[in-house]
Image (cartoon, rainbow, N blue to C red; front, top):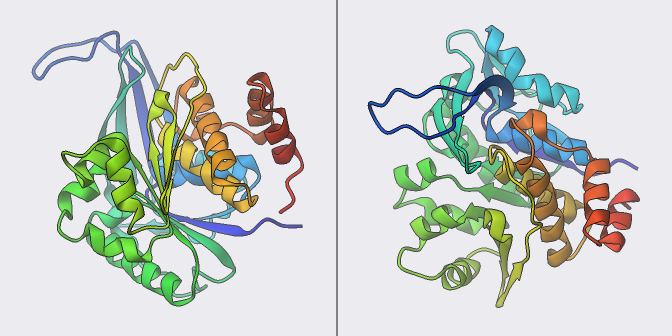
Length: 322
């Protein structure tokens, strides 16, 4: 039996990743320790991760007609993501992100959005045909025709009662501060990290801010990195403990977490088990350099859960009834 199709919408980038022994200050001159290319962009990261877990995934994104496009899509092609909706732009280059990873495994990103910002609504085929879930990566709502496209898809998904999730990002919050709350009525699951949470609800504790958002959105998931995550649904607020790992690169961890959560929802798991899977997938990616190319297969997640004593949940993933 085929699993439900998730449409992931957002950026596709070629990531140039560098590790440094110290993060430089402005105007400094610092050496790079390692350098390498990886598929990237939130949509590519999430789509590749979800497909490698076993989810049926379709990608809607836009790339240029240049060598960087091959790098951007390498991971989704390898994961057998349906790329039939990916658009090729002959006027604008593929998006490129320069990612600097400091010794604490934190990543700092410098993004050129390129063709991403010029995404248009596909006319044939209908992008929502056969779709059970629409996931929107926040950068897709920042600017250009891409934003207009996503708003149109969001309206259509709402009209046809398709569940929708949104993963926020700081550029979206900072460029559309006054209007972001208008989207919440159309969102079933909202993902955001602790920095984005404080941007949304300044001056509030994490628990209070998550609870306030949960009054507007059915499920709110706060990604806390090495502290696990918070899940708020209705009047329920629960902290899900992390898996302790030696992190080497935080690039793509948030997108991996989202994919793990979406997969858990596809399996019909409760919120605690779903968030545990998400924590596990994010923790695995934190131990690997790169972005979409670092997304783990389901077998790695199963082994990781078993090593952490979560045998029943590992069994549930090993034999998914989807």
